Length: 224
Image (cartoon, rainbow, N blue to C red; front, top):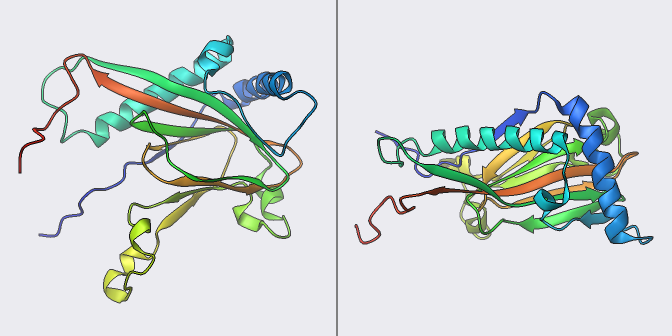
């Protein structure tokens, strides 16, 4: 019987309170950017990853609670066959939380996240799909987030035919929509494609750790 080994858990959600929360966060993040950047406004800006200490807004806490709940559910499903049976005492914590603002065809090159098991991106502000896709050169990739599969690094000189056609689609583009939350394993390579629009593209990025109070080793490393 065929088995598909090492799948990649991935989830896309919609924040129900986005219409009320996002404008508040956009203004707050804009003020933080102005304070940190001064008069020099660059096409791409990334804040420090200490927003948990910087932002004291109920709307921000509301979003973080939604994110934490979604990550808990995704991690539970992904680890259904790995977590030991019985009641687990688990602690979830944000290992970092920051925002990014881009425009003027700025982009964020290929990268992964460290010091965490789960990462994510939440879209706070961006032009509508119709506006973005009408860009004369960027088109449908305008502001998209591209994820690369785990086989991407092996395909540079790999032999490809119809026998391994399932490997040929090695990336996926997620279209940015206000209120959309994307969750993924921290090791999954991804990039923010170039963006240009009437409004800045504003996202919240974050890293999370989930630890057991009794230790995190589930399998014996010495086992064959």
